[in-house]
Image (cartoon, rainbow, N blue to C red; front, side):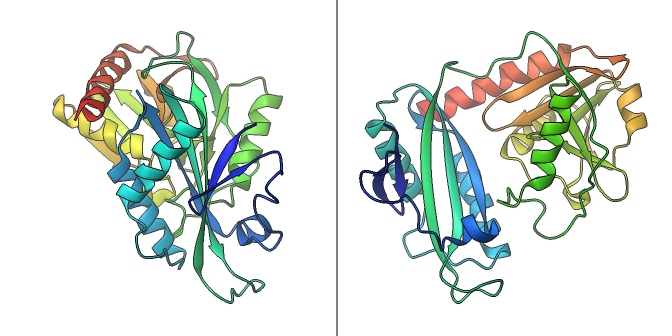
Length: 287
């Protein structure tokens, strides 16, 4: 039996304590909200302040009003309570689903906050680079239209779901998503980075990319290394001339892309970034 926290109260998936959420939940009915995934290492959440800032900005952008006491410390306490309940002591993936509370149809009657938190263990203790490079191509069926909500992890995720299904049909590991100006913005579940002649490139947020927590960490690490970093429009042509390509998200860290169509990539810089990321993560856990 798996447990979850619903607005700070424990509920079980088996239904013994009643429904987990009500049928009028706006996240269920309208995908009206956001979600956040947080990596736990050695029993402690990583980069929590950054996650909270993105949650805060995302709720504000969606016009959802959190209650008093909704703070990083409260979220950390809930994470630790849930980990203890689930008897998870090592690494884990925390999922927070934050939806608008209240009745109404497309126009909400109120804008309070409902929070569902779940936890699942992760076998690997730290961030590790995949031994086999990922294969990917560009998802052709849908395009992202950038707006003031696209930088957040929105519950409305059709383009990501459909791109993942398309990648499976093509026997690929993941897919790249484009915006309506044909610029590359990210993959099905991760931010995109290219290394070319020792310079790091990543799509800008104004093009529709998600404001990833790991994206920001890697940019900071690269700058500390003395690498030049450019947030800019990227095209399929940039993929063909890049030396290295990798993807980032808060749970897996960095994933090396081995191939895009007939193009093959190295991963020397990526290995260095993974090592530096683990040093930064370990420092957070020990502080």
